[in-house]
Length: 305
Ligand code: URA
Image (cartoon, rainbow, N blue to C red; front, top):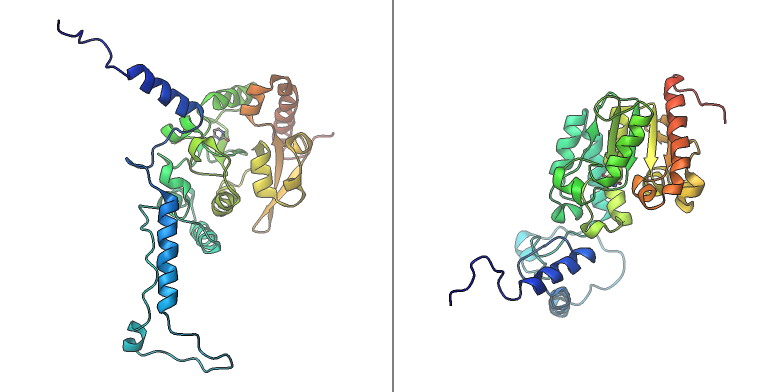
């Protein structure tokens, strides 16, 4: 009897269940067609480095020695450096030099378009390897109100715009409730421009690399008020005591962010994703949004507390 062409192939259910389980565990990106044994790679690199070290001539005797510029033929006789992994095999390990590179690139941007192009061309952040899109910003760049979140999630990575998933819809409703919207008078960005795989927290190094870019973005927008959505952006950008505090302590408290000698007023509040999980906190977030509205509509004067 011919098999039913509409029926699913054997093993389909099990494969679908496995994929579903992977997604639930946060494994929702593929990096390569075949698995890579990173332990074997690093063991090989270590062995090659050790072999090169053994072949190297013994160290020169200690003591002050004049600097010598080796002629080309002598330089060529130096042992070859240990073979390194090609960029396609491994994510770049960011270093302080990468942070400096980000700083120099960010400082060179004179307009938002230039900054966006520089970030899109920047290859120093390993998160870019797994992200589909660079998520730069959304909203009106002439806004007095700038909101800064943490990092793009799955929906933002697909669309290339911040806060377009469920937490973004809540954020839009909260903004609308105080008479603001991204299409009219609010501008939204994140500290991190690429989605961390599986929505993990960005590492300190990833934050350090993206920091100069978001600081420059704030400078170029020049908002009257920055609202930090959650503790992570507040900690990443304010540093100091903020780093040690939880969002319950930080929220609703006026802060100042100094960039290039200019002080920006900032107000941390809860992240909308947290509000979706903890609706009782919406009351406090609402208070923060009202405070922001009064501040903005008072010509940037602090409302009485
Ligand atoms: N959460 C964030 O912090 N930023 C986004 O863009 C989406 C979700």
